[in-house]
Length: 472
Ligand SMILES: Cc1cc2nc3c(=O)[nH]c(=O)nc-3n(C[C@H](O)[C@H](O)[C@H](O)COP(=O)(O)OP(=O)(O)OC[C@H]3O[C@@H](n4cnc5c(N)ncnc54)[C@H](O)[C@@H]3O)c2cc1C
Image (tube, rainbow, N blue to C red; front, side, top):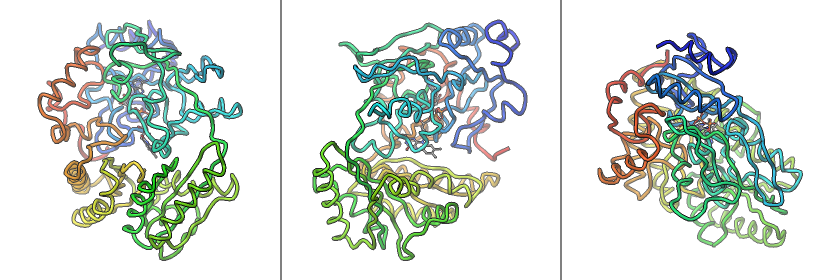
């Protein structure tokens, strides 16, 4: 294939190729599956994206959208090679409408920048994945990302009013808009979470949510995992829905202590980060009092409540930097993602440690406990094929257990390539065919982010062995 003809569409500085460039785009943050693209393009406008996609369609070259590449299920990995369409340069805010509480932005913008632009006016973009300083609006839409504040504020789809999307033939579609979607079928809901398999989303209208007037944050230490997990269910059972209810285990505490010199009570085996917010300070204080009562009745060791914004940021540090800090512990991490009813957390956590021990791999847990959204982080060395195999097997056992307990194969990280083969555990062949039919509305071929989400797609099985394996 002659990729130089792309130069008729884009400037030379918008086209990257060669060994070093393709190596940099061969995986996302799920590093055990890799595949190199032939070319990476950096369009700046919807029209340029449409021109690239039309070129791919005419040349029968596969293409994959990519935001920041922080996805944790292989969604942005170019499974069949071809062109990676990076939205890196599509990072502009196009309109802010405070009166109607919405904003239009290009989808390559980092999540955090949306909030930064309107914070002084008392608003924020509520979806807040822990990767928010780099992960993009397009990637958040692709994965329907959640975050610590999902418990109270909902996931990305609840904050998107409309999108402009280039479909797999290069047509520009507008779905919803400043006022949201009109009557009829909810195509916007279909696009959010479709992992780039229906087209390239180039612009989006997002909702702006008022910042709460009162916020109180506590970091609570527990002597056992079980006392912390039982507290999670206990807090929700009181009727209080905290803005955030996050859990970290000793493995995460050790990593954060090493990286950032933070200290925790030596007997603590688990931490809960609890945040309550709202517009009435008295109500928020009462909610935190109720949280304190539940924590104490479960034998917590210590409760630190932030007295100002600086202290609040410090308490959040252990949550926000937890995964990054794991980078000091081992060369590779696979962060799994499953959901269970939160009342099953105690049983599930015991199971996670047992599985890790049986497979001789390290595990640390940092997760959105209030949602029952589990994230066991396996740490290992992906240059060793045996360790890779053990990590994959352990992950599959854990996900199967989530389903057995009434949960799901994914809470917020998507299916990508990682979980494709686990979809039949949750869905019947008829369910999966219905999903394939939905996909065909937009994408009737194999060019737009192929071999993702749905299992047994024609032409993908023979490539699988090539993706999976040892880092090169
Ligand atoms: C440290 C860390 C913490 C994380 N914390 C969270 C968390 O709290 N909650 C959470 O939900 N996730 C979390 N994640 C996962 C990840 O950050 C999210 O899935 C995020 O939404 C991915 O955004 P991205 O820009 O990196 O997308 P990418 O990884 O580049 O892409 C993700 C998917 O979206 C598609 N895509 C990207 N851009 C577009 C576009 N413009 N149009 C159509 N499809 C597109 C891709 O093809 C791919 O399938 C975390 C990841 C890390 C590394």
